[in-house]
Amino acid sequence: MLKLPHTVLALCIGLSVQAYAAGPEQPAFPDEAPVQTYADDPIVGWHWYNEPEEQPEPEEEKTVPLSALPPSTQMALLQGLTKQKLNEAILSPSPEHAADYLRLQGYLVRLSGQFTRSASQALLKYPDLDYNLKQSHYNNTVPLQLAAQKRDEQQAIAALGKRYGLFLFYRGGNAIDNEMAKTVAAFSQQYGLSLIPVSMDGTRSPDLPQTRPDSGQAQHMQVTQFPALFLVAPDAQRYQPLAYGFMTRDDLARRFLDVATGFTDKFEGKK
Image (tube, rainbow, N blue to C red; front, side, top):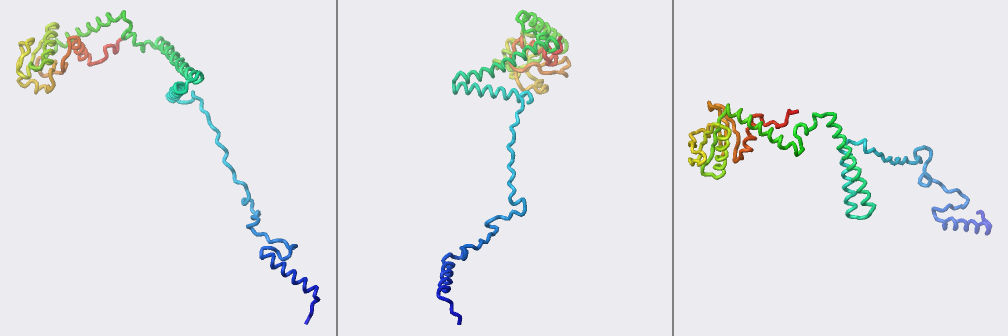
């Protein structure tokens, strides 16, 4: 049996004790290199492992000129901004806020003035658009316009009076119906129109002593509302309503004109 010297044996025991005390994670010998794994140092053999991620570029804010927007959008934006500035100037009073509002308001006023001037130029360039040629808005021309309308009404009454007579369906016991009976009686006398009054309740108006009771005419002509004034041809085969309810003589004359012209505007077509 081989016997080691005491000095060598002691050295081996000391090294063994040091290796045990270092633990399993520490190398037994300090000069030995540690083992590296993927967890300690990622693999870099393929380029995409460590390639930095691309960051999206921030989008640039695009500004659109106000003039490039539709006109309705432009006006809505200007009006909304002006209202906003007004509210700001009221809720937070200051010379600066008031000035911001006044600038916007002045801009809109200038635009409105430019439109007014352009409209005046347009009427000179396109005189057919000038309503003043059809119905003057000046006070000096009012008597002339009224006289012309009165003349047109009289012509319409005369023309219809040659073709039709008047049937008035009324209720003698009703105050409004009696007032309409009085108006129609005076109107027919003024213009020489033939009038046949028909009482729906058997009561006669003192202004229309020639009133006759209804004998089915109202049902035949489908009259359901009273008082009712109808234009009726002599053969009683052609008729049309002229007025329902109470109406003054002036309004009644205008209604004759409306019916005669097919309810067209009185200035339509006039140059």
